[in-house]
Length: 401
Image 1 (cartoon, rainbow, N blue to C red):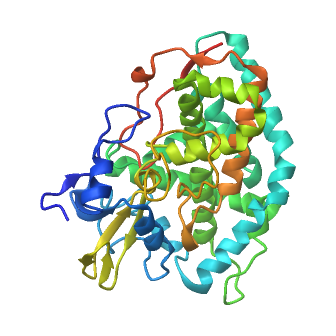
Image 2 (cartoon, rainbow, N blue to C red):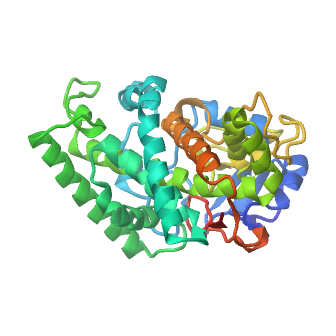
């Protein structure tokens, strides 16, 4: 275990590349002391087996107000230090019940039904981008609006409000970019918006997820409370567009960084599925990682951690562990099986991963078909990371065709 705490997140020299420190930590210090943006200390876990074990262990739960290290310096507001962070059930039967209620909307059958609409919207957005001429920012033209449209449609929320959603989401996901006052204001405004939307659904329900939740009950047979409905709506809206919007840009950026990869996909479209999984695995800029709180003594990789420890599980570092993946630092479009941890593991694994996969595969299919000549409009070294947020991404992805 390192004696001096590292600053976390660990900076990287290039937007699509991992910090050089990751490999050393996996080999020499798989449980490392780190200082979070809040100034609090935590333990960083980087090996594949250890990350998977911690995330899969039901004894370890998420941090929350007054429980574990703070990620953001803000005392309140944001996804970690707010009522929203603690109101949704985190473990046990209540948590499983909540996941079952939401999971019914993310089945393979539903995703197959959604895919034609997703592809049609992708085609429209690409046509609009092409009409405006090259170069273009693929993230702004396609990566952001497509997932917003999809999740808004699922929730029955007008996607015309997407700019407000983006602003509120960035503030709720802030580590260092926004002040406590801005984060608290965003939470209040977003909560008020969602409360009004839920009340409108009570008056006039539709065929959408939020309308369906109004008909559900909790473990005591009572209707779900307004705060649970609001937190669920906000959580799905934020997670449903932020992560996928960023991943579309990073996926295309990785595939165009070495254009032989793009050419290989053009020659064999059957590789789209494995290409999506491999870019998910290779994503070195996925964000903060998953935080877990230990309320009992735990041993990880030979290091004993006392009760009260906060652990940060870096799925991105674990996904490059040579102990699990041969040639882990090489992007292999044919890789299979590919048991990456990009969506987490265990009871808190990303509930929306079927939707994310469907969107990424659909976008890649449509781009290959409509823009086979697509290429980066800047040098890969000039791509810039999003900074100061819990999620990782590129500020923009300049392309031409």
